[in-house]
Image (tube, rainbow, N blue to C red; front, side):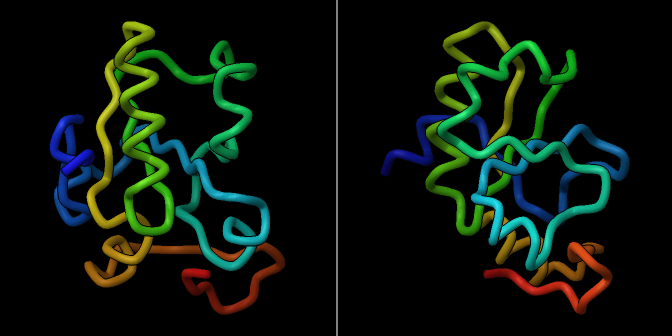
Length: 109
């Protein structure tokens, strides 16, 4: 399976305060995201590579497919990146904190 070829971690094991990169689309982000995460939709990552913080990046999408592709790309660029296996669905299931744009009740779209 594709995702096993990239470094990955369970959502529950992501350290508090870790640098998170959310590669979902704007409507998905607005519905629910991790407070403090950097939002760069998958298709924009190559053009915005310089905006990404140094050090280990934990990459999220909805279920882990898009983020696995981004992790593969980032690793090829020499970056330290890890896929959050199961994405935001796993994050929410693990009871990790979420926020929504505009203060609405967050959910995973």
